[in-house]
Image (cartoon, rainbow, N blue to C red):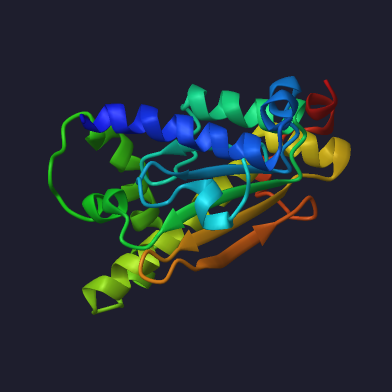
Length: 214
């Protein structure tokens, strides 16, 4: 059996198992979704949102990219964010990185990775902002871990800079923003940063009340 054929076979088994547990599972899923959480995670295959949080389909709205980035020119991410916040009205937005992230590790080198260079440039900026804090750590693995945590922190800050989040904070005092890092070695999620509507966004990134009400 070819590997892709196994996926199709496993899908049938999964669907059958779901119907045995709840004969209306797919009928209910087909009507609408109302997730409480929006997850922005790394594309790494070892960090699937539903599995590491032990949640069912329909509970988490998901976007994934290399190194769980929030880039202000990424229309894909911003479109998904707007839908999650404005339409689904999620209560929590989670940026989830993971220790051992290859994207962050690559960004700390001078290697050239083709098109990926343009994406990694955003992570290099995180390093530039926190160079002294990172460089003081002599152990290579601990230094990488610190950069991964700082990257998550900066991506949460990038969320707060968007008009999408600021507008939602102004109108409904939500969602709450969270930065987590997942441990590949132990399966544990580590809470790095939390922000809510009381957070004071740096004035240069703050939109006026009139713009938020428009």
